[in-house]
Length: 485
Ligand code: NAD
Ligand code: UGA
Figure (cartoon, rainbow, N blue to C red):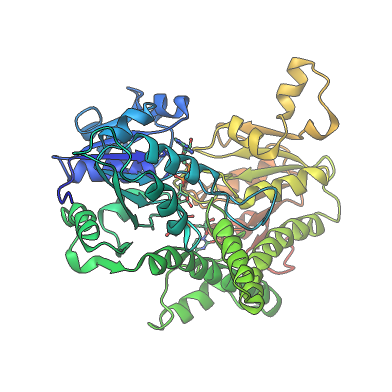
C-alpha cells in the first residue's frame, strides 16, 4: 500500500474540482495535481492567461491559480494519461437529478460517476485510491467498488497489478466563499474501510487543517452526512421563509425575528436570512435524492417530511411573483420591471436553480417587460436559463422565432435602467444594490412606482422617504403602506 501521494488526478473541473484542487496544490507543493475534464472549452478557460476568464467566478480563486497553475496544478483533457499517472483520484463530476427513467425528478443521475469509474478501472496502474468528491446517494461506493474490484489484478505487469481502495470525502464548500471554506473548513469528512488509505488522504489535508477537524467515519455515514448537511441547511431556509410570510401578515419583521431566535446558541444565527427561496445546484437536487432514498428504503413518512422543504421553497417563489402582480393593480402587461440580480446568491456567477429563473419566467409569462442586471452573470447565461432570446436581439436579427422563444426581457450591463419602470425587484443580495440612490431613481420611474426587495437588503426608510412604495420581504410594516403618489 502506498502511503505517500505524489500525483493526484481530479476528474471534473467544475465549481468543486477547480477550487478544491487549486487549494490542495497551493498547500501541498510536493504533490502534482492534474484536473481533467471532457469539456474542452472549460479546460481552455482554466488555462486562459487572463485570470478574469476562468470558467467560474470565486473571490480569491484567481490569486491561488496564479500561484499554482503550471507549477504543480495542471488542467487538461487528457483523462486517460492522468488517470494512469495518479496515486489518488478524486471523482468530482456532476450528479444532477435524473430527468427520465426510474426515479426521474428525484434520484441522482449517476451516469457520469459510472463513466469515470469505468475509465479509472481501465486506465489506472498499480494501487489507486479512488475518492468520491461528488455528492452521492448513500451506498454509491458499493457500485464504485464493484466496478473497480472487477478490474483488480488486471495488468500485463504482474509486479504492479491494479488494486483499489474507495473513500468518501464529500465537499462542504459554498460558492462565493469557496476559497475560505477550503482553507479553513469547519471539518473535513473522510469515510472509508481501509485505515491505511484513510490515513493517506487525511495526511494531505493535515498540510493545512488541524487534525482534530478531520473526521473519520465509515463510508455510509460519510455519504449520508453530506446529503443530510445540505438538507438541514435548506430546511432552515424553508423554515425562515415560511415565517417571512407570517411576519408580513402580523406586523413582525423577519430580520428582527431571525436575530432574536439566532441569539439562542442552541439555534445559532447562521442560515436564518429569508429570501426568494434557495437556489444553487445542490440543495434541491440533494433533498430530492433524500426523498427518493427514503421512499426506496420503505420510509414514506421520512420522504414526505423532507419533500415539504422543497414545497415551501417553490411556494415562496410563486408568492413573490403573485404579490408583485397584485401590487401593480393585477396587471403587469407591458410594464417595465427592473430585475436586480440573477445569480442564485451574491459573489458567484452561478445561476443554477436560481430563484430568479422561475420568478422572471412567471413575470414574462404575465406580460411584463424585464430589464435584468447582474454584475457577474452574462446575458447568454440568462438566455439559456430562461430559454428565451432577449427582446433587443430578436428585433435586430429578424428571425421568426417560435412563440415560446420570444422573451420580453433584455440585459443591462449598468444600472442606468430605471427610466419608465413601474417596479424594481431585488433578487440577489449583491453589494451594488445596497446603496442605490432612490431619490434619483424615483424621478425616472412611472408612478406609483414600487421597490420589491426579496432579499431585504435595501434601506426601507430611504426608499419610502424618496416617495417610492416599498415591499421588503418579511417586513410586516411595509404591508399595504402606499405613499403619496
Ligand atoms: P460542475 O457541473 O460544475 O462540474 C462537473 C464537471 O464534470 C463538468 O465540467 C463536466 O464536464 C465534468 N464531467 C462530467 N462527466 C465527466 C467525465 N466522464 N469525464 C470527465 N469530466 C466529466 O459540477 P460541480 O458544481 O463542481 O459539482 C460536482 C459535484 O460536487 C456534484 O456532485 C455536486 O453535488 C457536488 N458539490 C457541489 C458543490 C457546489 O458548490 N457546486 C459543493 C459541494 C458539492
Ligand atoms: C451549499 C452549502 O452551503 C454547502 O455547504 C454545500 O457544500 C453546497 O451547497 C453543495 O453541496 O453544493 P451553496 O449552494 O454554494 O452551498 O450556497 P449557500 O450559501 O448554501 O446558499 C444556497 C442558497 O440558499 C442560495 O440561494 C442562498 O441565497 C440561500 N440562502 C442561504 C438563503 O436564502 N438564506 C440563508 O440564510 C442562506
